[in-house]
Length: 131
Image (cartoon, helix red, strand yellow):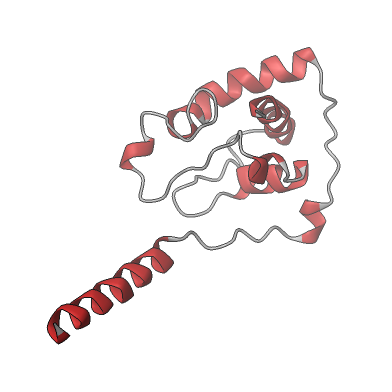
């Protein structure tokens, strides 16, 4: 009985340790980006441009509807995120711009690959994923 109890406790501790390690670290956005105002007004043109850019550059990991279920998502170490959730939708435009521009880990940076206005168009399109 004592061995069973010890095995159970060891298993719980091991599971909790793995769970803590598997959690992504918070993505800290510098204040100057967090408070940035989006210079590209939300419009049909911006959203359509953003959709085309998102489809080409983002959907393979993040999925067509931003659910984190793109064809490459299964091969990633970390879940790419669900853009329809309140946690993502509550971010500022500057948060999204910074993360897209600078990247981190498996998320590539788009600085030098996409113009800033193109990133802002993607930010505008990502707002449409709200549930």
